[in-house]
Length: 281
Ligand SMILES: NC(=O)c1ccc[n+]([C@@H]2O[C@H](COP(=O)([O-])OP(=O)(O)OC[C@H]3O[C@@H](n4cnc5c(N)ncnc54)[C@H](OP(=O)(O)O)[C@@H]3O)[C@@H](O)[C@H]2O)c1
Image (cartoon, rainbow, N blue to C red; front, side):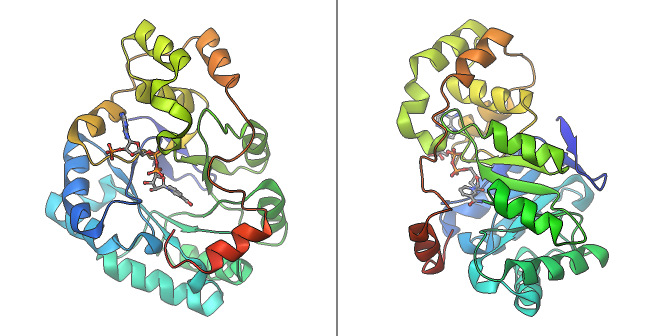
């Protein structure tokens, strides 16, 4: 497994396993299978309502805690300096862990400046090894950095061949923030898995579209956390360290960028209203 080094020196696997939209009843089995397949980084969230199942899978695996990299996220309802600390403890208890590897502010809404102060304190107390944000566009990210003691270690944002975030990644790099992709396959939207050019690149390397996309992210230095409930796909998505895309492959994929979200734009009033009313991610 390849790693990236966060700006505080913490090493994070470049590839992990995401559990969004895995029903609670299926999550323990899926995470146990993912750990068995070789994943060591897990991405959950309070809003996914499956942290306890992730925790049971970790316990059942018997894998040493220091071999794992566990991320969870703070939902909008838990924003604010004291509320965030309480929400953190609830997540830690659900996961049955004594510390996290990465704690993220899930959405840039509500009192996230208060939450960030609490998270900086949690970091100082050793309760999490890194802290970060998610779904922050450059304006909100840089403003948070300018008005805080510690810059986020990670910003987890929608990143896939149809929304590549190259300019946003440059801003993050300038401030030492590691980009992490959510939805690396765009959840299959836009015909990603049957895209003729991605299929052709895959055929040239004896690889699937999923493997091409993950390899493209890795070669751009983007951390990825693909989700699958299928054992064959869990293994397939990990098998991306034995080939390299050519410059021509990278250019072909670069041309697919539409520059816009396939889900929704966090900078709109509608997104603020929609997410404030949701209790899940
Ligand atoms: N911070 C945020 O706001 C946010 C938002 C969304 C997601 N996330 C995180 O990012 C993770 C990944 O994103 P995502 O789950 O939304 O979507 P994704 O990883 O882009 O796509 C998952 C979909 O692709 C399918 N799939 C997986 N591997 C495949 C393969 N090798 N071949 C064909 N199909 C494959 C899965 O189906 P099967 O399961 O049936 O294989 C599932 O339908 C999430 O689980 C979550 O941890 C974060």
